Amino acid sequence: MVNLAKRSRYFLDIDPELRNRVKAVAALQGKTIKEWLTEAIIEKLEDDIDTREGLASLGEVEGTVSLRDYLASSKGARHV
Image 1 (cartoon, rainbow, N blue to C red):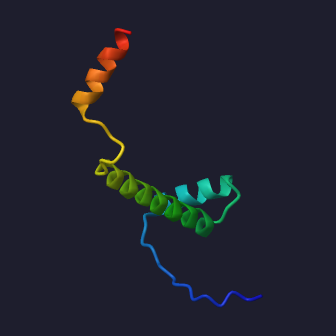
Image 2 (image 1 turned 45 degrees about the vertical axis):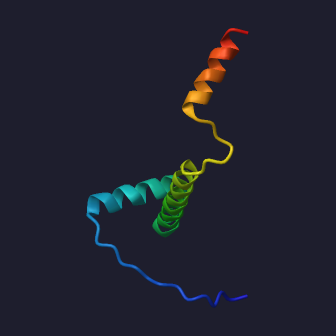
């Protein structure tokens, strides 16, 4: 079946040295530059999402204890 999803084309103006490095790394992995760059973009997006979710979870207080309570409980545990 033919994929009818529209695709966009982006042209990058990069230094020849960087292009050669990307091409070499992609070739070593048996991939085209397009495949390698697509994977790199997806990884970067996933990292960004993970970072945002991690930062958001730092603001959650449910199920947490204060530093004072934690230190008090750990002191009590050492003396047991």
